[in-house]
Every structure is written in C-alpha cells, then in structure tokens.
Image 1: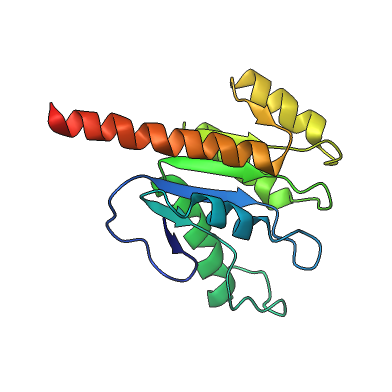
Image 2 (image 1 turned 120 degrees about the vertical axis):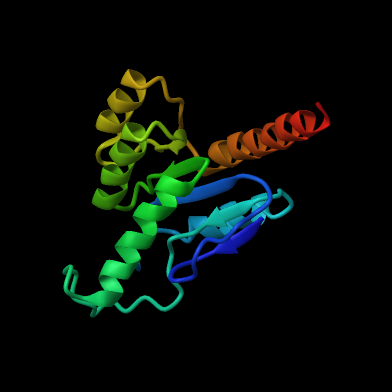
Length: 165
C-alpha cells in the first residue's frame, strides 16, 4: 500500500483507501501504525496515516492555528474519502479524538474495523456503540490486522471480478 501522512494530499489511486484512526497520544501510545503499515505493505491501495512526521506539540490547538487546523481537516477529509476506516484504542491512552472519530465514521456509514483491547478506559462505551451498529470489536492489534488483510484481499478479488464482467 502507498502510505500518505499529513500534510500530503490524497490523489487518485488504484485500489481501496484505508484510514487508520486511533491512539496517537505522543509519548503514551505505542507506534501501532508502523505495525499496521508493515503487515499491509503488500496490498494494493492507499493507507492514510494521520501520525504527522513533523508534529510540534507546542502548536496551539485552535482553529486560528493554520498547522493545527490543517491536521484536523486532513483527518476529517481522510475519514470522509476512505473506503475503510480502522480504529485502534491503545489501553495506555484516553484517545478522546479517536472516540469522536468513531462516532463520525459510524454516522457517515463507513466500513469500520475496530480494535479495543481490555484495559481501555472506555471499552464499555466502545462495546455498546459497536453492538448497536453491528460492528465486530477485536481485542488486539493482531486481530484487527488479520481482519484488514482479509478485507483488502476480498476487495481486490471483488473488483478484479467486476473488471472481467
């Protein structure tokens, strides 16, 4: 998969687009995105990774700050434009923005993959929301990676079959 990080723009691509939403809290969250990217590298498509390489924690988080606003808009547009959105809630974090983005993706009717391991402070809330929206909740990063690999493989097979018809 081609990997795009902010502020790089999404262009035309062959194959599906996957946005990986989840815990980023600098210094607290694991770099789980790297593991997802590594395991999906052989699949066709585009992976949108919101973990910005040049993030500056001193940026004021206001709409008036152009760098901060650019980041938030990039993430929102990424979710809106993606075929799939994967969520990972790192138990070492609070991840309020990820919770918000999960609600947004559900409201947009996105195809969602979700991992919320035991120990995440709001796992009960995530489980209830997932149940009400017929979403499977994986309890590990490895399980969601397996699910994503299967989804991307099926996407390729379905679209390859459509091209032959």
